[in-house]
Amino acid sequence: MGAPVHVTEQSFEKEVLKAETPVLVDFWAEWCGPCRMIAPIVEEFARDYEGKMKVAKVDVDDNANIAVRYNIMSIPTLGVFKGGELVERIIGYMPKGELKRRVEAALAAGVS
Image 1 (cartoon, rainbow, N blue to C red):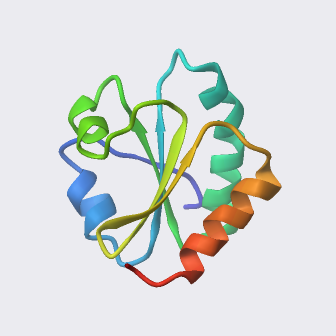
Image 2: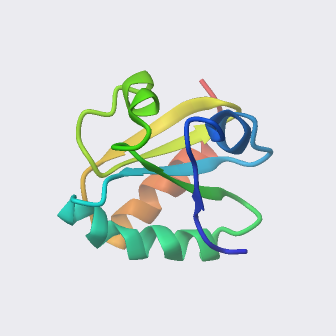
């Protein structure tokens, strides 16, 4: 595996909310330049965290209801879900080291 799962409104509950492991969700769109810049980092995370965290991608243009539900106002936005709850929201592009620090902090934290 080791690759992001493309999630739709039909599969979001199963793939993200009911996942056995935490899930990093990349909210993105095809036309978004910063989304394309962050995509290789998200793909690396899918490989690096295989077995510890699932990585999913949600195209906000095709899945607007999910974006509205989680109040995604700008992209890219990365969300860390644990136990069906959004526990961390990371907005905008940032270098891999900073993203990794934020993701690992969210993974280590308890569900609020």
